[in-house]
Image 1: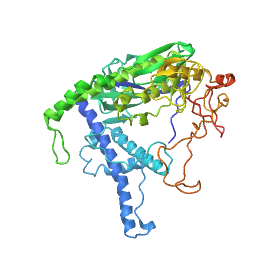
Image 2: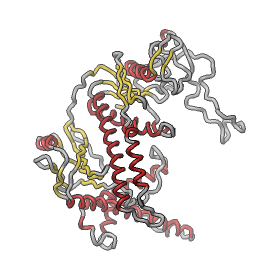
Image 3: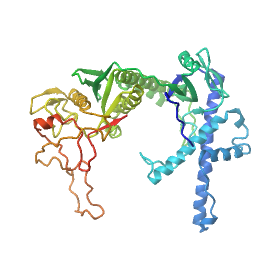
Image 4: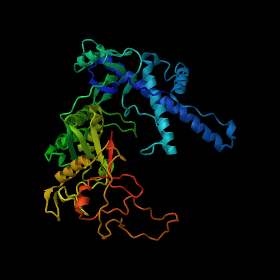
Amino acid sequence: MKKFRPRPGFTILAHHLALDPNATTGRRLHSHAGAARAAYNWAVAYITAAWWQRRAEQSYGIPEDQLTEWRSWSLPSLRRAFNEDKRTNPRFAGWWEENSKEAYNTGLAGASAAFDNYVKSKSGRRKGRKMGIPRFKSKRKARLTCRFTTGTIRIEPDGHHVTLPRIGRVRLHENASRLRALVDTGHMRILSATARLDRGRWFVSFQVEEKHELVKVARPDAAVGIDLGIKTLAVLATSDGDLGQQPNPRHLDRAQKQLRRASRTASRRRGPDRRIGQQASKRWEKANQARNKIHHRVANLREDTLHKLTTRLASEYGTIVVEDLNVAAMGRNRRLSRRIADAAFGEIRRQLTYKTRRRGTRLVVADRWFPSSKTCSRCGVVKAKLPLSMRVFECDACGLVLDRDANAGHNLAALAARTTGTGVAGDLDNAVEAESKPRGADRKTRSTRPRRKAGTGRAGGTIPSPRAEKETGDRQQATSAQHALWRPVTDQSGGNTGIAEIT
């Protein structure tokens, strides 16, 4: 299928609006979302049935050319098969006409994408974690959503209602007159609409083609280095030497007392038990709803804080430098996992990525192994070790005493100042090789002794570390080398390993 491309001068955006449906409209929204889930489960059963049938026939010794044919999971094929089956299948025959065709198309499109991801992951053509065979969606756990691409999709002239196919007019919680004015002037065109139940409320997201207008940032020549943390959410160090902080509100910690009380109340009620088929009582549903309301408020407060922070940074500075943090590995620390999840480091970077691109500014992502906290921001000496318990950086060479996070912020800001050209990997200045001390700090050591030695040509041999033969210990550079400290480090293969940038 040909990928959609916006017109010159336009860009693809999404506008997220909260709905205020009445009882009738709410039932229609639930019906469409349930139809999408039913169509998804039908597609999973339709495809996997042929797989299991072929496996059974192979166990009986049936030749390959006589096995059951494979069933295609492309979206057009699933549409044709579903349209032939829905009129006779007792699961759909009595009610499929009540919903829009877009509801069933949403489920079929999701199943098609799920099988594509599974096959690509199994063959090694998909990045990320391994994907398993698509499974059925539970009625109790599945997210209620439905996407509309055809039919009547519009924002009403009053700005307080939207119209969706087969659902009709739905009232909005907010005034969308500004979006309606953009549609009337031809600066925006609605492509699709997605209705979703999220945090106990219905929302609609309009995917639009909107005219792109660049807004000049307040300080286009200034750069800011952002060091994210738990005690302080973000330490901001600018290229002018200014230092600022964004306190961590810790919304989840503040709500722990209410959550404990709500959880105790719910635990004393008769909850659902699928093992014995026990249904939840009305009192448990009421208590669970009260507990979920606290979680929803925490999520809304966190989202509001992050959007205000990232919007302020993207609209003020021309260059923003952040670190490439391994948030998934950081979350495995059982002592800090809750606070790391509450800080949402990955969401901050995601928002900065698209907001800087929208404003035409730069987002520089420092390499994951860049020693921003271990490097002295005054003389450039790099410490061999700096445990997390040491919150104050003390330089043994120049005597600098500075907060650990503030020192890292200054190093990140200086990193942006040394980049030239476009700033992307491969278009940066060359680095000056640093003089290393023969202390063995550039070699990776083992915490336990290996049981046996294995040669390089044997299975089970030692795999060289990607950081091997690179100096990480204390080093005092010469004056000429200190000026090039912030430039990207070039490895032996010629690739830049110091800085990467998202453009």
